[in-house]
Image 1 (tube, rainbow, N blue to C red):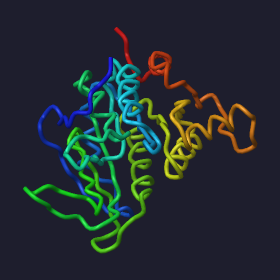
Image 2 (cartoon, one colour):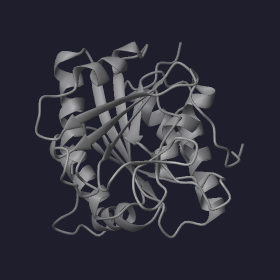
Image 3 (cartoon, rainbow, N blue to C red):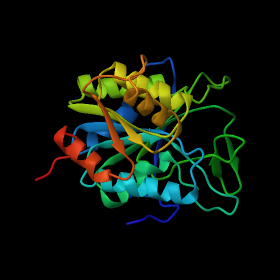
Length: 258
């Protein structure tokens, strides 16, 4: 099964949009959307698609769709969408939750993104997040835009501390038994993300063959480098073996099989 690059929307046809300051209290209404998930588990998909071909990107979507077959928890990622100059979808990691939801409609797809530039309305009231025509991703059930007050822009990692605190709160106070992260490709921000979840001893899954920071971390593990991620909560899976990841998710309580 291989997906096409289609500009799908979520099942309700609308996305709840929330804005919060990065150093304010956690956004309760956004967090409550997660409690609609039938299974109280949450996984963050982290990473990027730099140096990936169009076919690589479609295979990425297919990998996650197969691996998360039967998933009914919260699946979250960044909250952006990129379109080509002709208005076609340029798939990114941030499209994974929405594509998985196409075949798992009960899951809750959530996204976060930092405000890195001036927001604007363009054309027929299209909400644009920066000067690169980046849009909010319409496949999400809810999006949280994280800012530093009304006048200051954040870097691309500006939402990371907030989403980690949100996942911690789900785990500690909202009955979410398991929270974790899957890393695909990515750069410095992605590395900081999987380092943060590994430090918390959350299941931290690295997809081998996806490229860049994720593969660098896997190489460090395989060659016993001093800075390598360690522990039973670290799991490496090859990008050609989505069923191995699905088995891991089942064995560790993220997917329930009746």
